Amino acid sequence: MGLATRGKSKVNSYILIVSLFVLAYYLIITIGPLIYNVIMSMSKTDLMSEWKFVGFKNYELNFKNEIFLKALTHNFIYILILVPVGISTSLVIAFLIYNTSGIAKKIYLFMFFAPVVTSLIAVAVIWKLLYYPNVGLFAKIIQGFFHVDSPLFLQDPKIALLCIIIMDIWKDTGLRVVVLHAGMEEIPQSIFDSARIDGASNIKTFFKIIIPSLRHQIIFLAAIYSINALRVFGQVYMMTGNPAGGPVHSTQVLVVRMYQEAFLYTKFGRGAAISMVVFAMLIGLVLIEIKSFDKSYED
Amino acid sequence: MKRLKLNKHKTLKYTKRSILHLVLIIGGLFMILPFLWMILASFKPNIDIISVEFRLFSSNWTFDNYAKVFREMPIGRAYFNSLIIASVATFFTVLSSSAAGYMFSKLKFRGRDLLFFIVLGSIMIPPQIVVIPLFLMISKVGLVNSYPALIAPWLINAFGVFLMRQFIFGIPNSNIEAARLDGASDWRIYVRIIIPLVKPTIAVVSILTFIWTYDAFLWPLVVVSDTDMMTLPLILGRYAMTEGGVIAGASMATTSMVLVPVLIVYIFFQRFFIKGLSMTGVKG
Image (cartoon, rainbow over all chains, first blue to last red; front, side):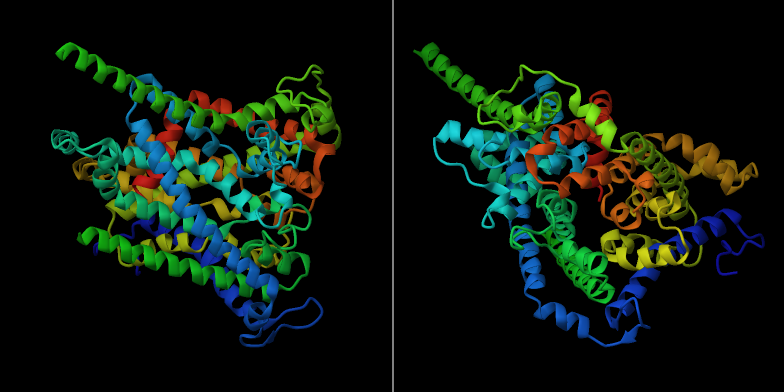
C-alpha cells in the first residue's frame, strides 16, 4: 500500500481516492496524450493504412515548409511585440492609477478591467468590424483626426499581424494593470517619502523605485504572456477569414498551422510534430523564466 | 510673495492632476468603447454600421439583427450548451481543486511531492499541445459530439489546486487536529472544516474556471461537428467564415448576446473578478 499514511494500519480512504483521481486524470488527459503525440509526430499517418515509424521525417518536412517557417517567425514577432509593449503600457497605466484615489481609482480599474472578463472570441469578432477598411470605426477615426488615407488593417499583409497583436494587448491590459497596481500598493510608503525628501520627480520614482520593486511581477507577466503568444489560435482564426492565417499567410501562427495540418488536411503526424515544436518552445521559455526568477531573488 | 509661490505650486499640481485624469479617462473609454459600439451596432441595419457617413446613433433602430440570429443560428441551444459545460466544469474544478488542495497542504503520504510536481507540470502542457491525440482518443471511444468530451479537459485545474493549497496552508493545524481527536475522518474534515473556510477561494476559482470554459474555442471546434452541440464561441466562429458587411449587424447581435450577461455579472461582482484574476498574477 504505497499510499498508506504515517504507518497507520488503516488506509486513509481520502488520500487514496483523491490522489488516485488526480493521478488517473493527468495520465489520461495530459501525460498519456503527450506520449501519444510524440509517437504520432514520428509516424507516417494517413487514414488508409497502418501508421509507420518514420523518425524525424515530419519535423524535417515542417522545417522545409515555407508556411511553417512563416508561422514560427510570426510567433516570435508576436512574443517580441506583445510582451514588452503590453507590459510597459500596463506599467504606465498602473502607475497613473496608483496616483489616483477613492472612487476615481475604482472606476478606472473597473473600466480597464472590463475587457479581461469578456470572451476573446467575441472580442475578435467586434475588432474585426472595427478594423473594417475605409468605413470601419478605426478607419473613420484616422481619416477624421489626421486627414490621411487609413490603412487596410487586417487586409494589408504588412500590418495584419500587428493589428491582431494590438487587439490582444488591448484585451489583457486590465489584467496586467491590476497585477502591477497590486504590486505597487505593497511597496512601503516610507520608500516614497524618503524619495520625495531627496527631491525625486515622479518619473525618477517610476524608474528607480517602482520598476525594481516590481521585478517579480514583471518577470511573471513576461512568462505568462510569452506562453500566451505561443498558444495564439482564436484571435487569428476569427480575424483573418477563411482559411485562417491570411492574407497570404501574413498572420499564420503555429497552433493555427497545427490545426490546419491535422484537421483540414488530416496529416496528424505533421500536426503532432508542430505541437511538439510549440511544446519545446514553451519548456524553453519556462526554463528561462525560472532562471531569471531565481536570479531576481538573489539580488 | 510666499503665498504667490504656493498658489503657483497649487496650479501646477492641479494641471498635473487634470492631465493624469484626462489620460486615464481617454484610456478607460478606449477600453469600454468597443462594447458600447457593439451594443449600438446590434440595433442598426447593416448599411448604418458599415457606411461612409459616420453615425454613432442610428436613426433606424431595428431588432432585425436579433431576429435574424434567432432564425439562422441555433443560439438558444448554444447558450444552453455553453452554460451547461461551463457550470459542470466549474463545479468539478472547485470540488477537485479544494479536495486536492487540502491533501497537498495538510496530509502527508508517500509520493505526495511527485504527484504535486505532476499537477504543476501539467501547466506546461496546455490543451493546445495535446489536442490531436485527445481528439483521436475521444473519437476512438465514440464520444465525439458529446458533453463528456466537451467537459473532459476542464475537470481539474492545476492553477486551482495551487491556489487552494496556498490558502489551506494558512488554516491552523489545531482546528484539524482537534477534529481528528474527535474521531473525524479526512472526508468529514474536508466537508465540515475546509470547505467553509475556503469560500473566498472557491469564489475566485469558480469565476476563473467559468470565464475560461465559457471562452474555450479550439477544443470545441475540434470535437464538435453537430449543430446541436455547438457552444457560443463556435456560433461566433461561423462569422469568421463569412467576410464583412453582410453579417455586421447579425454578428454584433450575437456578440452582444454572448457578452452582455457577462458584463452585467461583472458590474455587480467586480470586486471578486478583479481580486480573483489579480491573484493569478500575484500568487502564480
